[in-house]
Image 1 (spheres, rainbow, N blue to C red):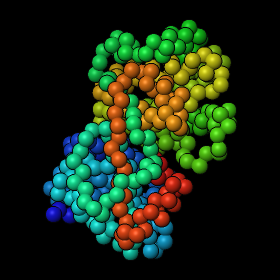
Image 2: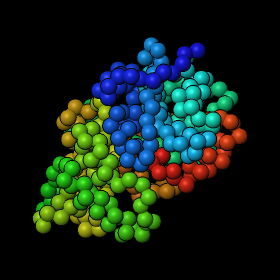
Image 3: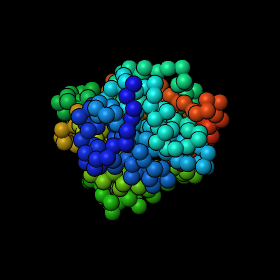
Length: 325
């Protein structure tokens, strides 16, 4: 049995190791630790002695008695030697009497979990259970041909209006956040309790690509952004104003982003989940891009002592700040 130990290298060393191991996610990257820190989470990077397995743990101490550990990026590398012990390893490193550990697997690739009886599948996972992934290795012409007829028709409609697309930067953070708030008010959604998309984009820096669609009066109508790690991208921000909806601006923003990601040499674009029950309209929009559907792996959790697992899981259902990231 191999123990997990603290990774002592630099941020750059960490990202390089993740990419070498494979199956890594933006949620395991050093930039995402900054995103989580903005919601009050500390980070802990752990590796096996042979550096064949690595994971980034985010944790909060609820009291001197309880620590909550959240691993949204899953594992990089192989879990064969550590699955049955790594929960205890995390508790040891956090030096807490009680520890709740929860792990998600944001990649749709199948891995061997080697789970034992101390791990339980989460009944109410934080994220969607399925996703759509676009294969960016295809030629531009094929990607456009793969669009479903209605999606392709709406894209053509957007291209007939006097709209412009440009890359957004740190100076646009407030505008992106304002657009998100406008959309929430328009849809009569509850007040935001999580981080704004614009703030996430700013924290990710060069690991994000965000595009905005503007009208002739330079008003921001739609925004679409992706987090980038290695040669993969993940959808992280999307919003379109009521005025933008009337000119199909979301179609132009999404297609422009997909095209630019391909031009930058990325190989896949994960649209970060579909949920027909909670948001069928958004799910249909994502399916319209013509990508392949995949099921995410289940989330698992473990608590020491074991009887705490359900009480803490119910606490997390109320969205402990940042855990849904």
